[in-house]
Every structure is written in C-alpha cells, then in structure tokens.
Length: 363
Image (cartoon, one colour):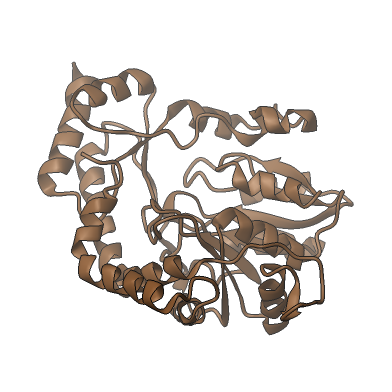
C-alpha cells in the first residue's frame, strides 16, 4: 500500500500523459513552451482568478509573491506556527521576519483571534496557509488585516480545488500561491508552483520576477530570479487538471469513509460548514501516535506526521526567540498522524486501515 499512490494515478492517464510529454520533447520547447501559457489560462479559469503565473515550486511561488509585494528586509509578516517550513523560510529568504501565530484547534489553520496581538509597527502582511486541504477563515483574517492596513496572502499549497463560502482556494485574497509537488492534490512529476492574482500589474511583475526581472529579451527592468516552470511539468499538469474535478469527489469519498469508521475512536478532522476540503491529507489525532504508527507499519500501512515540530521550535528559527506561546501547535505536533490518502484507495484498503486502528486502540 502506498501513502499517495502516484503510479496508480499515472496508469489511469498513461496514454494522455505520455503523449503530452512526447509532444514537448518532439518540439524541444523545454523552457517557456506553449504549454506554460495554456496551463496558466486553465489554472486561472479553474479557480476563477484573473491571472495565474506558473513557476518552479510552491516555495518559489511564496518568495516571488513577497518580492512582488515589495516586502523589504526587516519587515514583519505574520504566518502560522503549525505548517510546513517553506511558509516561514520564504519570508526569511527575502530578508523579512516571520512572526508566528498559533493554530486554532478545529481546522489547525492560523487562529484569526490571535493575529492582532502579534501585529507591530513593522508588520506588512499575513500569510495564511490553507492546511491539509481546507481554507483558513479568510473573512475573519481580512477583517483584522483591513483594520491594520495589511495585505493577505493565501498559501494554498495543500488546498487547490477546495472552496471557502462557495469560492475557490487561490482566488480568495489579493495574491495567493500553490504547489504542484507530486503528492499534492494536483501534482506534477517534479517541482512546480503558481501564483494567482486579479491584479494585472502584479501579474506582469511576477512574470518578470520569475525570469530574471526580464521585460523583453536581455532587457531587465528589475532584479529577479530564475523561477520558471519547465514545459514538461506544465504539459503533465494540463492532463491532470482535465481530470481533477473527477478526482476531488473521490478524495472526499475516502475521507468520508475514514470518518464514518473512526469517529468516536480517534479525533477525526473537522470541516466547517462554509468549507469544502480537497483532502491533501487525512489527519487524525491520537495520544498513542508512535506505537500506533508502528502497529500499522507491521501491517504494511504507511503513515506520516505533518508536522512533528512547530516552526518556532525549529533550529532554523530559534534565534527569533518565539518558541513559547503556541499551546495548540505544540499539542498538535505531538498527536497528529496522517493516513494514506489518494483518489484510488479501495473500500477494502480503507477497511484494513480503519480496522487495524480499531484493533490496536481497543486491545
């Protein structure tokens, strides 16, 4: 059993993917080929944003967005304490200071009620991660941001395809990012990412920034980086995007089956009524995590821990001395455990996983 069975997915679309890859190789359009612009148009249409700008990874998407927003060294940016490290490190990469905010216990997303206490005179904006497949509470976050004149960026690395109050992730804020890392709900066959915005000037700036600040060939309007998506990844994503709407209900089928079997046995994920989740992960909470993981491993069932240490406790951020005031994040780090999740999990496989959990906890 695979935690995320990409091979099974590949077999579903093998002929289409092979044809798309062969087309790029045949045309030798490896950099800035026509699939890039086509993918950008299709991504924007999917989530109903005006512009999508493809780039080399979800991490680069964040740093490009921060550069486009003119974040300067010494500026402060609020971000979650409980998430993947890229959200915090990309703030640091551009010279700014990440200021960590605790999670709220229901969805594990950044807690809007704890934002205001973290805002200071150097605060410029808020990055809210839509964690594990569902969006943060952006109305509540924007209310705080608007009060203090801050921008809001959605890090939708795990939530592309999810909705918040009827609107798609990555079209909820002035600027948003996502990742196409292979194991994401929509993943390519390497690294890839995208930035979304309704602001045409911001989109044009992002396109220059990802290509060495180049306005036209060998004319560089600003300092930029090499953060282009390669055309092979775009071609693969275009195939997978055509099938993505079919996969989302299958991910929900798996999550619903897990919840029916495990509710009352472990702490199962909660999705508020205003959200739909794309289930990047199905994450339960258990006190007996490590022993349960070992029990499942002996039965050939893989698990993962997203994430075993909050960002303020990471050695990379220790010099910031922000490691104390995060009780929810610290509790989550000790108890969360993610189960296999992909659209092709069978009822028999789900039954084996859930029955194995029940047997162990009831032993």
